Image (cartoon, rainbow, N blue to C red):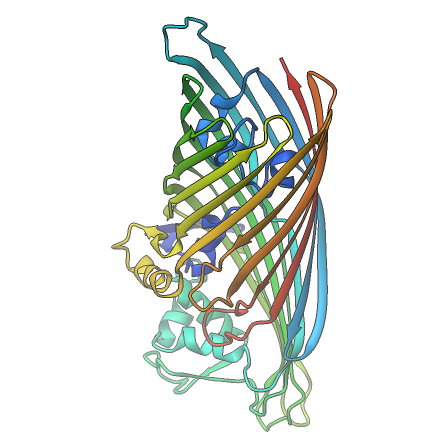
Length: 501
């Protein structure tokens, strides 16, 4: 797979791809719970209930449950706080954002012929912000053993010195670019500096440990889904539906890593501190489909089954990097280096296939008084793949995906109780870790509640949800793989306005 590099000053050229990671795949394989306030208040347990604009995204048969046309829009305020523990040092950061969470419409066409069992067709369309990427994470602490120097050494080892010094940065492979930063920033030294065929390197960060490190990550953007729905009912006992989904993603991540040390100076200059900046922009679109069915076993008891296909994304990556270092020898002045090629690597598109999902549902409806519902979904994250799978650049990360990821289940439970025009709602959600180790991204627990009021043909719903999840992802995938223990706490308030037409 090839990429195009745009050099802001001199033009463009061609080289090979950016190094994707397992975390990149998981980012697009996971969906957050979004949707209408009623849907969120009941933790999304709508697979056998239907009759909600967001229920269609779980089970497309749910639109045939509607008796009237409906249009709705939802807005959310999301606040996320990340508490970090890095080698005993506690830090925290947070982010607050307002988003258009959901918008959609369903139109119902009834056949009043008593001899026709297929008495209803529903057509709908909905938009949902399935993942809001706005987030800030800051970690700091003193690492007793590992330095960022090992990151550059690991990339450089095996690369001839002549490829680092003799090939322009814009024409280099990604691993050569990392070696380029390490060499010209004097973070690494070649074992034989007089030989262009040298392939072994050592760190120029002084030994001794106790490296103070900071890692700040700011992300922004969204993953959205536009669904086109059709559903039908047979004698108001069996409901069948299908969705065609268009996915759009726009993700930006800005990270800045800082390290310094107070280890004794040496006769030759060694690194005292450095700052390594990375910018990633990923954008593209995808396609998936859904099939679903709901059965009224009795007037009160309902069962649902839904399948969501793999999502096939076509994605583009843009990457830029810079490095600043300070080094000093015994009795000598500080020497500063600023390595900024002013290059944005713009890569050719690649395909990411995220896994499909099955959802099994049950609900019990207490007439017009309320309901209790339960959904259980299962997804095998190890089936996530970068394509083409025979591409040498993807073979390694796909093996890592198979080895590190696993099948995860998601349980959603919801309840609703009606008092005349007022509805009271609550829910619980549990989602298992997509990682075999259960710690890179941990289990998710979420609680929700809300209320709604019907003014007749107009309804107003409000929901609050709380989510907590722990994670521990290394700052880098090689060399310095230590990471902070992060506890993420997300509070969300959603307001929905619905109109029956």
